[in-house]
Each structure stands twice: as C-alpha cells, then as structure tokens.
Length: 173
Image (cartoon, rainbow, N blue to C red; front, side, top):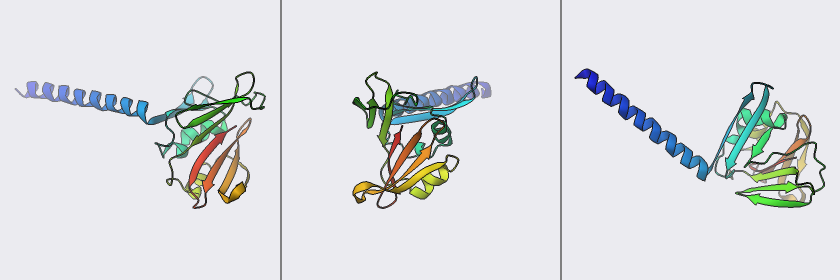
C-alpha cells in the first residue's frame, strides 16, 4: 500500500511540474522572457529575449545579458544588431515594445526598447554593468534625464534614465 501511495505522489508531482512548465511557457509567450548562456563551441556569451521588454524588470541586470552585450551577441524579439553593417538608417519596424532600425540592405543597425518603468535605478544598473567600460555619460537633450554609453567589443549601447534616475530605455548599436 505504501508503494502505491508513493507512485501516486510521484504522478501528482510530475503533473504539477508539467503544469508549472506549461504555465511558464504561456507566460513567456505573452509577457516576455529572456535567457542567456555561453556557446560552448565559441565560448561567446549570448542572450535572447522574446516578448514585451516592459514586463520583465530583471533582465537588464542579468549577468548573461550584460556579458552578451559586451560581445555584441544579444537578440531581442528575433533581431540582433550587426556591428559590421553600414549604419545609415533607412527604415524601422515595431515589434511588441521594441523598435528595430534597418539600413538599405535590411541589416539591423539598432535595436531600441523600453524597460519596465520605475524599477531599476541608475546606481543598480551601473553596478550590474560595471564589467563593461563606460565611453561617456551626461544629460539628455530637453532636460529628460541622463544617459550612459557603454563600449562593446565592436560597437556600443546607450542606456537612458529619467529625472528620478530610473532606467527607461536601452539602445543597442
């Protein structure tokens, strides 16, 4: 009888895990989800985010995201900036809350996305990104707030903070 109970519990636990996995998958399809790691063949950090960037406050501080930015290997909603592409802007596309800019050859030259409002302070962001070198920082035009430009291996990324010092936008060039 104990064996039967153990089997029943294992079955219930398995069903519970499957339900949680299914719920997580549905949530990631709706709101957004990021994941990252290291490509074992090339040992290059990577990060892939799909969905609404304004729904997940944690990913801009994720170490995998920070390292992948350094190595120009971040994909947002299926688009990755080509640091070798000619940077002349030709047209753009909106997907979720992300703007993707292209050149005449349809190469991605910029990915710009908003972040979850009022959740990440400038101090928190700079601490999480301290492994990446700052190229410049200052006030934004129009007295909107401030910006920081970080160097990557082949390009850069800009981050923007409002007057209260909270992160509101990231541009990957």
